[in-house]
Image (cartoon, rainbow over the protein chains, first blue to last red):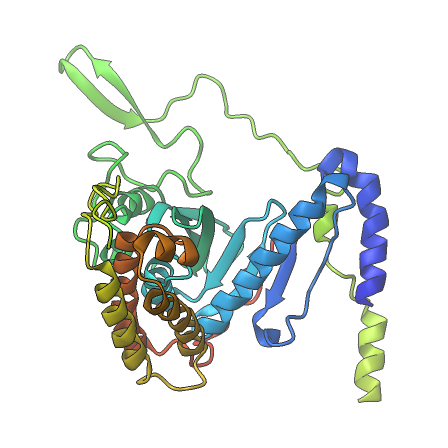
Length: 263
Length: 116
């Protein structure tokens, strides 16, 4: 079935290649790390990818290596289509995994480039924390991802990397994610009395307040928003499929019933 | 040892030249190997790290000239190697405390890592 999927996707890919480019997405499920079962596998049919495939194979092997060493925290490792390795971990493992990646001789990711958050409102744990690391010794990058919801605090990475100080302040200011054991968690980008966390998906583009200079009181005042034109909400969904490479396998209700009957 | 063998500078800020880098490296690697003995044998971290360190220790003990050591290990200058070895030694202690070879703490909430 894996072969069939690969062949089918190969034909699909050659059709969509012009519009979407080559895609290499390999996922390793935590439950099957010993046999490294591939959940989906789309092989690029481009001519220039012989070297790319070697790099992909190396990165996959490295992802397995990390997974082998830290099975307590690593839930999944995956490789994006641009050969970027991502390690998805449980939030308890932020400090262990980051310390390991910084200090181990085979990883040496000594620079934390950024701590960012992706807000996905439909998830229970809506905030996906992303740590981008760079290794100067080995000239490579890795991404560590965790999750949290609006109320659960997360360990601060400042004990591991000094650059996490301001990066986490920004994450707190823009999203409202609390970092415990942070030396100085306060706002960094928003105005002093600003209420709200602007980068959340439910925060409107125009905000809730506007500022203007008031001549009577001779200073800048902060007032509720007054738009001259009503904010136009565009429906950006299209009738065509957006992500053909990420189609979920169709589960028909009849086959499920058959299976349960057989059991 | 030839008179011009000791290098004048590492050309990296924060790393001063260590003329006795070989001895320091030997000592650090052996210390790390003994520290690793405290971890359980089947832990992947212990296996892989022992492999790396034994390989490097072999090279350091076999070669006497520092440029050859740097070339054979291939991970930068000996001063950087000393720094890496010190960090690895500290990491072993921390790994003993965290024990990351245990099975997964808990699965992610369903659909957490699905995209889009």
